[in-house]
Image 1 (cartoon, rainbow, N blue to C red):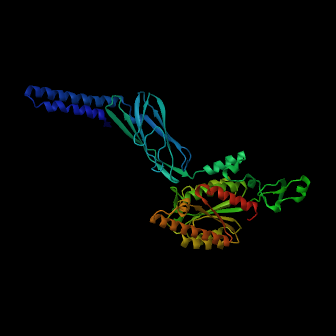
Image 2 (image 1 turned 30 degrees about the vertical axis):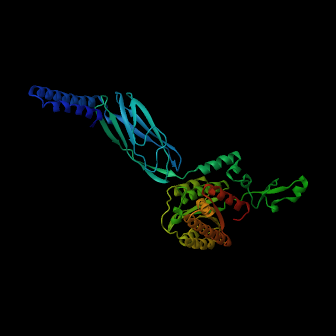
Length: 446
């Protein structure tokens, strides 16, 4: 229990008669008696206020949170309060949220606790919103509750044990948007041509009208002659092919683009690819590594596998370790010997590490079809294209041009070894990767 600021202010008022007690014996005696009476009254008020104020144990607080949090997505957190006493009460609540979850607009101010006035035997809900800024496991702490006395003289404080761990998953905005657009038949608005989802393979399915991007070998000339317009053959999508997502979480993935690590962009793209692959009934696997292999999921079908990949990636962290591609691919070769599309998220900005990466990716050919995925930093592109105005700008432009030149050489070297390359700005890397996957399916490259 603690006294309030109001009580302390009243306590200081009692100092005045004590100070005046030094002026004359009779007057001083009166002032001393007045001060004694004043402090006796304050003590009585504290005792009375404590008696008429419900005990904190009669008030329960439970935090309610959703099943999962998503990176960058505003999520509500509720504090359910129940006054089990037969008295009216005022309570103040302060929740202990993870530092990585800044508050959004809500009832709880970052610096002030929320205050609720509750009638006897009643309940209230205080809600606030947080926006997670980091993936992984995070901890909510205890809830601190202060019960204000009805006379405003005392405060009764209680710490409620409410520690809880929550998982912050990568944002599935791209996946949800893809699914919504697919249902509406508007995938082209995302940059995905709908015709690519209709399938192409080795088994004939049906005929359809020719589309501008169809290959000439798909034209059915007999049907074209009969109908008087170009007609293309439609083939069944080849299913049960293996796609293995290989994710480098070494030092090069620590680089940030617009305040977001490259690793986060890579994870978003990987999850969308895994989801789209399940639509074709393909098998999807995962390998996460840096200087050692952190996790491996052998390729399997179905959305359950997508959720398994999500569980492996939600707390993936890039480190300063140098990625060991040779060891990672040796590990992969011992655990998956069948042909697969190896989609490797990597970075080629560092010329020294890029040479080793290119050699190791090329070594997987021709047993596997390999695709290297890199995130393009538009800031470097802008630096390379900027006008020169100062000595510093000359230096910055020269560095940017050199970096871009090394990057282009690395991509050319990969192409010479038969490795596919997806290089796209961060905001479009997911769709660019999906289009490449669909292209592989359409051209029967796997």
